Length: 256
Image 1 (spheres, rainbow, N blue to C red):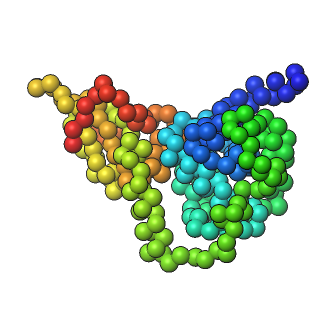
Image 2 (image 1 turned 180 degrees about the vertical axis):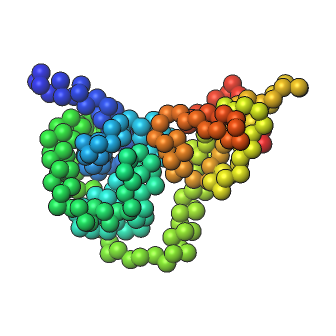
C-alpha cells in the first residue's frame, strides 16, 4: 500500500489532469488513460512538461489536444479515426521537434506502440483510478480508438465539407475560450490573419490603455502563440507586449 501511495504522489499531476478530463470535460475514462499514456511517451521522448503546459490551457483547447492524441493512437493501432484531421497544430506547439502529421505514427508504429502500451499498463492503469467518476464498466484494456460512436468505415470528406465542419467547431466556441489577455506599451496595432478582434480597457481621459484582450479566430492558436508557456513576450514595432491565457474577470472593462 505504501508503494501505491508513493506512486500516486509521484504522478499527482497526471491524476489531476485525468480527473479534469473526466469530471470537468466529460471524457471517457479509459480513453483518457490511453491519451495520457501517449503524453507520457511524449515527455519520455524529450518533451518535458508537456502535460503541465497543456493543462494550463482552457478546457476547449485541452480537448483539441485530446482529439489530436486520439488520432495519433488510432494510427498506432493501424486505423484512421473517422473525421479526424491529419494535422497536429496544438500538439506541435508543445513539441521540441514538430511532427508533420499523424502518418508519422504509421511509420514508427513498431517503435512507439510498445512503449505507449507499457506506460498504459504500468502507470495509467495503476494510478489513474476511477475515484473521479462512476465506473461505466468499460473493458479495462479497450483502446480508445474504436469506441461505439467511432466504429464506422472511414470515408474521406470533400475538402470544402471538412473546412465547413472546422468552421462550425470554431464558431461554437465563445470568445473567452479563444482569447489572450495582453499588457502593452503605447498604441496597439495588430493585423494578423489569426486575430478576430482586439479590445482595450477604457482608460481615463488623457491616459493610454495598458491592458487588453485579443480574440483569435481559433483556440488552436493559443498554444502556438504562447509557445506552450503560461505567458509570452512579443516585440511589435519596437514596443513590448505580454500575453497570457485570458481568464474572465470583472476588474477590467474592455471596449473594441
